[in-house]
Amino acid sequence: MTNIAIIGANGTIGSAIVREALGRGHTVTAVVRDRAKVSVGDPHLRVSVGDVLDPASMSAAAQGHDVVVSAVGGGDGPGHLATIAPAARSLVEGLRALGDQAPRLVTVGGAGSLSVGDGKQVWDAPDLPEFLLQIMHAHGDALDFYRTVDDVAWTNISPAATIAPGERTGTYRTALDDLLLNERGESAISVEDYAVAVLDEVDEPRHTGRRFAVGY
Ligand SMILES: NC(=O)c1ccc[n+]([C@@H]2O[C@H](COP(=O)([O-])OP(=O)(O)OC[C@H]3O[C@@H](n4cnc5c(N)ncnc54)[C@H](OP(=O)(O)O)[C@@H]3O)[C@@H](O)[C@H]2O)c1
Figure 1: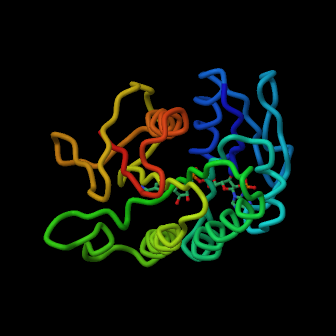
Figure 2 (figure 1 turned 90 degrees about the vertical axis):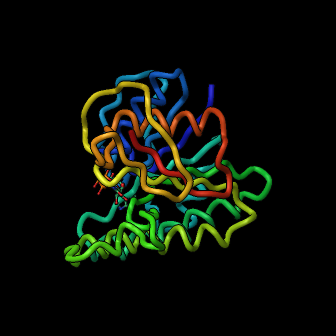
Figure 3 (figure 1 turned 120 degrees about the horizontal axis):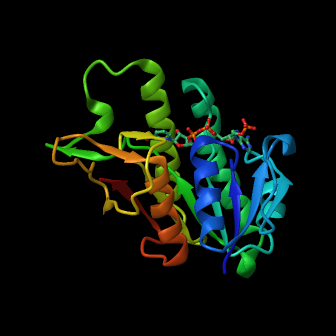
């Protein structure tokens, strides 16, 4: 049994990660800004209040846990720019303050920086709307920051280009920095199977200090 703090636990992806973690018998602390947004019914679920942009708050939220998972988002493009890379810095600062007691950090990333061949990345596609580019580059900036960190055990997990609630098949493929495409040339993963991949990494770390991608 692992003791996991999940930031953004009431979000679309965060709540699936909470369900997957509880389903595996782990103990979960849902870290949210608004306690009322989490319904507590599982004896292994507790709720704490925290702001990912406040390092002291993240230190307090992380204390006593084995792993911190962050699934925070920023809503629109400007919201992501104001949230994702600052959150990365705040989480790392908050964990650093715990020294030897710092939990591992597993963060939800973005698909925009994944390679699509010919030296191009997803965000190089023509005619992408500005808000989407902002979201993609917010995650890219966070990943650039994580890659400078060698004193906190981090992993950043990029979903496929399309991630939506669907079926939990329990199967997925991984790559390091390449966009995964299925046999129809689509890049997709269900929220539920993405959560399986996150918990597989929590349970058995294989990508410490790096980003990896999840897709069908
Ligand atoms: N293909 C892709 O690359 C792809 C696709 C989808 C999503 N994503 C990424 O996955 C992440 C999660 O997406 P989602 O759809 O699950 O987002 P979501 O449903 O909007 O949830 C975002 C969560 O972040 C929390 N949050 C925001 N600011 C916070 C703060 N300062 N402190 C603590 N919590 C905060 C929100 O809490 P409140 O309820 O209090 O606001 C909410 O729980 C995002 O970063 C998104 O960009 C990537």
